[in-house]
Image (tube, rainbow, N blue to C red):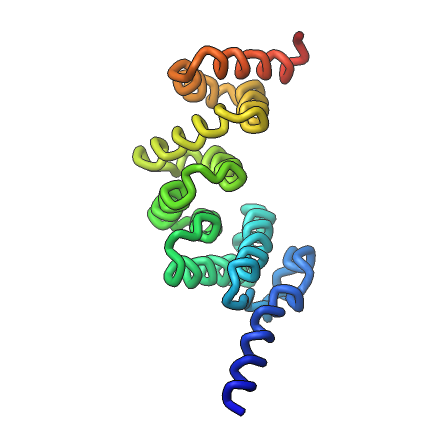
Length: 208
């Protein structure tokens, strides 16, 4: 009987992400206050919850963050991410969610530490690196010198792939403050990657 009950509880937890409130509802934080972002034991279940959390945490405006209900939602997501990495410290995406929640709550030290851990535990995960770069660039003034170094590793990783180089070329065109940093990184790469970067910059500028 106990085994059956435990099995049923495990199944219920695995199904929790599918039974959660729609992510869009989070924009009205008061209606989302009862959502606890529970997850099961599988990595799939945890990833589903973390992806929802990441979207929700970054969807709120700075004005929204004044609202206690909004901060509670963000804090819950950050707590769930911490819960995951406490058990699975190699979960790079959960570290990223922890970083996102921390920066929204103005916890700069936790933001930097979690963002570095995300890079250290997933240095070759390009899909996560794209998110890390986006987060780091959005909150660049809050990066520590140490975290700037880990972001440089992510930028180099992106510059080494066809999809990644397109993204950084677009950022080069749209963000003047980004240009010197990415140029210094690309200059250390093989000639073919430098050519690919220059070609994508020209395309992003509408030139051939």
